[in-house]
Image 1 (tube, one colour):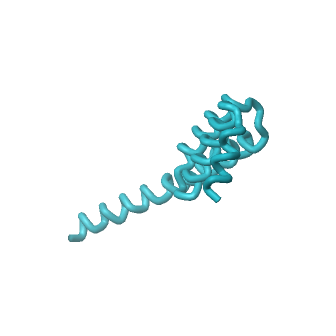
Image 2: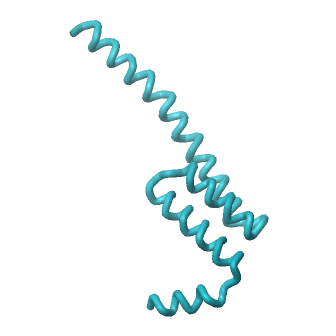
Image 3: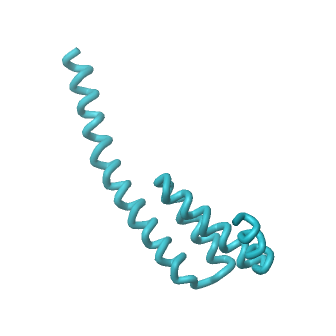
Length: 91
C-alpha cells in the first residue's frame, strides 16, 4: 500500500506535492485543536493552488474556531482569577 502512495506522489508536480503536504499538515493540526497552525497551513497551501475552495473553507472554519476559543478564554480566565482571589482572601 505504501508503494502505491509513493507511485502517486511521483506523478504529482512539485506544486501538487507541496499543496498536499500543507493540507495534510492542516488536518493533523485540526485533530489536536491547533487551529492557528492549521489556518497557516491552509494559507501556505493556497500559495500552490490560489483560490482553492477547500482551503478557503478551512481558513474560515479555523477563524471561527479561534474566535470561539477566544470567547471561552475571555470568560474562563476572569472566573478563575476570581476563584483564586477568593481563596487567597479567605485562606
